[in-house]
Image (cartoon, helix red, strand yellow):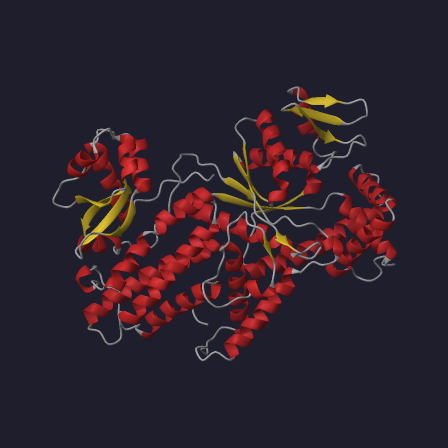
Length: 573
């Protein structure tokens, strides 16, 4: 779904490009498309001897671009002093490189290479995520959209360098009417200051009342219709604005705690019937609108009538989404619009995509669906609130740190460290699963701290920071010397570090955080094995320099990956 941008020329990418170009030249298919396909399928690994590094490529990829026989490909594809080929197995061709030269070049890169856009006048990608409703506490049900959307935004920003994060808040619709009716039943008239909790209770109460009395639903719709058409009293308008203010204050506290920032807060109310007349005129001008005898307005698309305005002239969610998409395109110049919303809304976004295409064929709507967390519904009053989840996570981590023999005294606030650890555990617990997978929420699963978890990533990062601090007298060398990095654990770690670029490419193509999460787990395993074997403190200065360099580069990659996932890397825990 995401178009991968052109990376800055890292040494790893230069190696892949050089190999791909030599293969393409040999088979007389040196077009950019062939070279890119070869590069995408070259995977780094070990060679067939202790002195070699090997790039693996499926034989089927070579045969796709060449009619040469298997023997001819193996014999002629690369034959030089620097590169040789062999058959790893009947399906894989192995291209051998000198290990020392490769390691020297890989560790030369001082920092993670930040990719640059591959197009001039690059237009930003709009990513809409989180998008809770007003007058409700931040519910765990919105957690997946929030952390998946933040991950996709961070990844897109890292790869493309230009993304706009939008939080589209639901302040428009019958839920406002339900909240008012619930407050009235609770005898809350605003003489006492409303809280997000009291508004939430009122909404739940009104929905429970509607089960027994269907007229409640009609009353809620009527209250909203009056608001949209400008017929509400000044008191109702004041309450609506107060609900918005209370909600924003609550949300900003949660987002700050999660380390999430938005470029824009957008509101459904910005696309009320009064404010989208220009959009309706545009739709009418291009012949898309059809006015029905019952007073409603529809668009015909794919032999289906899609209602745009109801017979009382009020808008629908789809109408407002159309207007919002057109406004964002006009304001930001973006043609790629991403919506991180659960899978149950797939039909809605199918309709949105089909209608937007009719209006402006240059606009691309991408629905990024995800599975739901079951067992939670604010209408039934069973919702787990996000601040409750985060507070419990922090409490558990505080307790674990208190009785852990590895906990160190530090300048940071213990509550702050525990909070970061708890949030890391919750985020990774979610992101390590396939995006479209449903799962049942449980405290035990969300706050698990053993095995492959967010705590493991934080622990490994802290361990690397501590290693550099303890050996602060050892400076990073000016030159890499692979002769001091011959141990198996060192080579394994370097190869895993090299795979970071390939992992980011695969992650961006699939928009699956679990690909990056599992890679970071493997990277941590390699780091921890290397730390056990590659002693720094008791080694000669020149050996210690090379080992510190290796661990320094590994920490940069681990830190970058954690930040993309939405974690704040700790320096101590």
